[in-house]
Image: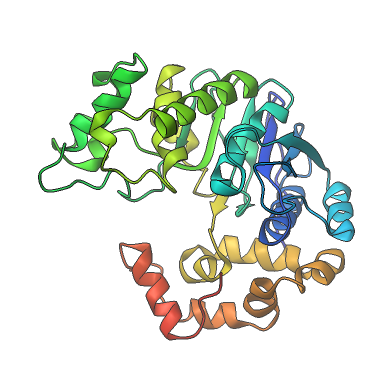
Amino acid sequence: MTARPQETKGAQVPYTIAAVVQGGRLGYEALLLAASLRATNPGFAGRLCLMEPQPGPKWTADPRLTDPALRERLQELGAEILPFESRVFGSAYPHGNKIEGLAALPDGPFLFLDTDTLVTGNLATLEIDFARPSASMRREGTWPVIELYGPGYAATWKALYDRFGLDFAASLDLGQPEEYWQRHLYFNAGWFFHESAHRFGARFLSYAREIRDNRPPELVCQEIYPWLDQIALPLVVQSFGGGRPGPGLAGLDGDVTCHYRTLPLLYAREGDRAVEVLEQVAAEKENRRLLRDWPQAKQMIYQNKGRKARALFDREDLPHREQAIRNTLKRAGLWLR
């Protein structure tokens, strides 16, 4: 099968798709992202910008994409690789790349995608209001972790909203019970957008740094790593007048993009369209010769272990928690990082 190119319907405001690129796994994931964008949206009018951290005192090793052939292929696919300096996070918190790297983007509307994302459908079908930011709701209740005698969900989140002078009450989903995690604005940072990469990035960095360095008393017993980006993100979104995504954004984490996390998880739980796009772009000669150097792709795609992983699960009746899927894959010897 081949990935079906999508026709652009109507005028579309050009915007930047942003992701992080580094040496190792993220370089290969960036290749799949760029190739899937080109295959499914050949008429995309915006830019694909890959934010690349540069070596410096915040890094214990060179974080750059050092494979010249992989760098050249990304550029052939239309990706622009934009360097940035890590001034706050670096090796201690690589998730911070998606925060600090926003300053390297051209200022204007942007859609950030985690690098482990495939574009599987027509981006023009998304109803993105860049003036009202939002982010991914494909998440589990990973933070905060409520202690028996500690503050609850409401007290913990309210302390953060108060710290930044935000309207806590406006963030609540009153259709959810009190002291249930989904009552509170909590995102996966796998995608988010806004009309200004620079303003959003500056505030994201300011909030994340404040939470790291000067957390409210209600957070003293909370572990903030690796969740810091997801703790700060809803605060930033709410500060710009945004909130939960509406139905016009259902294609993100739906028919238009697939945040797969790892290739074993993609084969285990994602729809047929995601597998179709993955295998079609991975079969292209220029991509295959590079992807075979990545053990995860070599085994899952080219040695057909992905199909074995797929046969273990009924995608109409998947376990509710990702950990259960991982455990099944591990028992079958099909879990690869």
